[in-house]
Length: 353
Image 1 (tube, one colour):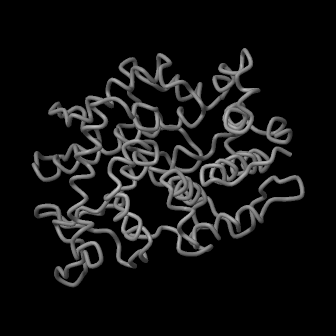
Image 2: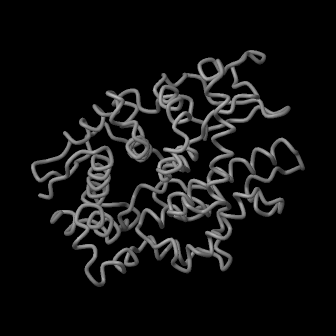
Image 3: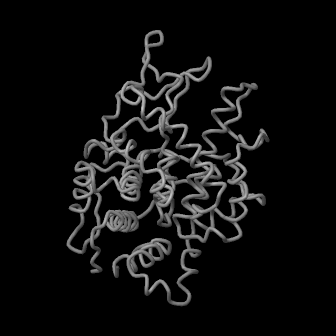
């Protein structure tokens, strides 16, 4: 903790203290610490008066830039930074997200998902995708008990459940011309659905049959084919769909540290990490990369891709980059905190050093 409090950003200091030293986090003044985050203030200055960001809804910028970020990833990044969901900036976005849950017919809410020409199939896909992303964000913000979110979550589960019960869950591909594509009736779970489930423990316990079927699906090998699906007359990439185990090997984990940590955290929150030997061993490998002072240091094999998927982008970095690059110590602090959080979520004892 002393190392984190010396080298980490204000947001990591706040998150770590709240998670592992709650008595100290209750001291007067600690609640204001995350608002010292420079990137949080940068995001706030980019927000429009109606709670939106100018980058649309699901756009994520390349590299470490915040320019052009969409509303939902920006909202979730502020939550990761420790900002209060009821703060004025996030409250304005919350109203918009609840409208997305209802699949509002206003075409302006489709943002970058609006096709150049009116197309019912593409519009339906866009509204469905935005509804799931909005549900994930609202669940992360702590609104599990809101009946609007619970209703949307129930519809999402009811949509995916028949797929998990069907043979399509193991063989979702059809041959179309000279390529294999996902059949039009494949209703695979999305990463947004997993994020939502990770922050809705009561909902998970109520839908135990769905959770029991989801685990073996997430444990099966990820196919080599690209997730292209037939949507009406169109063939579209569907990168938001989960088709199996995202982290089968250490190489897969090192290729995208943000998504790897996001996956392990979600599996820990849902309760699957303890049941899956492979994911547990990968967590152990990451913990073994810590130095004598228990701080994670990145091996040479670790790569930060130029563009991170929208569902995992909010997690890293929580540090405040200097001159466009985070220092190694700040990146190490980010990952050290996240590893401790994942370990805590899956029931491991945390010793403060």
